[in-house]
Length: 249
Image 1 (tube, rainbow, N blue to C red):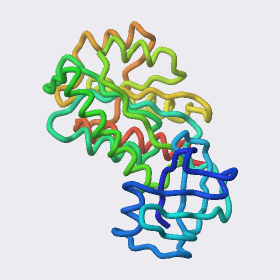
Image 2: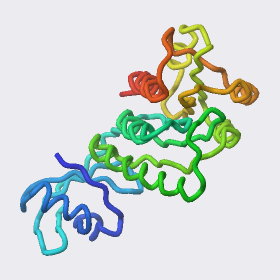
Image 3: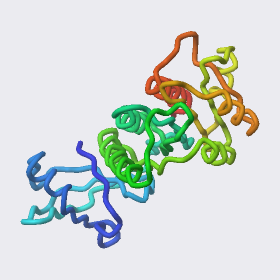
Image 4: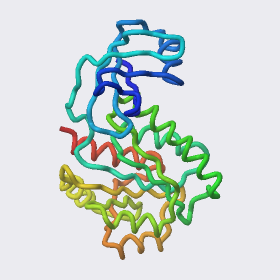
């Protein structure tokens, strides 16, 4: 079943009719070669939590007309909103991080310019990168049949990230010098549905000492993820997987 996202302006007559044009039209007609009578799965871009099943009624020269068959409200999203505060990595690693984080159920990705980040983005480059990362988020959301498209936010400083996270219910800071795996397990298992969860992941060089102090001063407690040192992309995938396993209903 192919999954698409639609704006409310495309859903007419109280969502009974859906009109698809542009890139999605091209994908349906020329790439997937779907036919009249085929069925597609659709979620709204504003994230109303529903899955709309439409049948393709008519394929015109520049648009596909679909008719609603039924609506599913089975809550495929995780019951907690997880925010990934990711230290900017080198090369194209951020593309992989965004893709897999979306597949694992993240609610939003916030790139963070930390002291040991090799990558430095000015405002123009950052806007271009975020646009690219958001496109990857949407593709991953389609592939994994998410009900929402997770937002990739503009890069922030570590100070801004800590301030944002201070308003969240649970704050997790995996740190290579931390010990006590039992404490990590207790924190993960204590996360409850409805809570917001901030996850901080350092860049390739890890967190600077002052950054860890900053998180402690904000009431966060660094945790361990085991005895092995994980790459920045692996660390994020690992803790998101733990949270998904714990929260999945």
